[in-house]
Image (cartoon, rainbow, N blue to C red):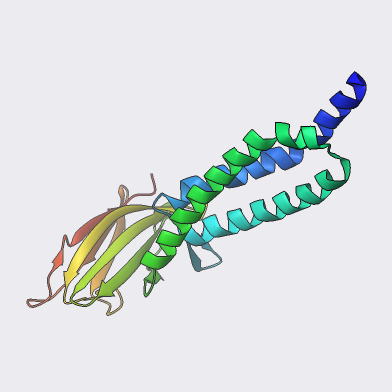
Length: 200
């Protein structure tokens, strides 16, 4: 009887590969969904909320596969013992899902651009611009050779201006990193205009 219980407990537990991959997916999804991060892959900008959504999709596939496996081998008692783990995963996945949803909503109408020229050691400047009614704003991301970018600076623009989209900027690189100058006009100022781009 004890041997059967031990076997039931082991079959109910997540196998090590499933557990580590699922844990990594949900933790990364939480971090990415609530932080100012993006990816640049093959010249395409992938916002953080989309990265988080992809990780949650992988987690969902793992959970479904594991559910099919457990249905055939796990006892009811073993399933009850795994309830805390499932609850923890559900809470973390819910937090990541909320962050992804908020990120997707805030990204409606956003315009991402990879600026030229490229800096030393593969460092790139990526901008994100959004506008709503008479207000505009932008963010600058420093993207290293790994393709991972973090927001380093932001600006606001009057009258919903998008200075990057209209080419009203300059980007210069030096030994200490890059300097992005975003220009406005007399009637549509941009503040602040200077932004450091440092991939560190």
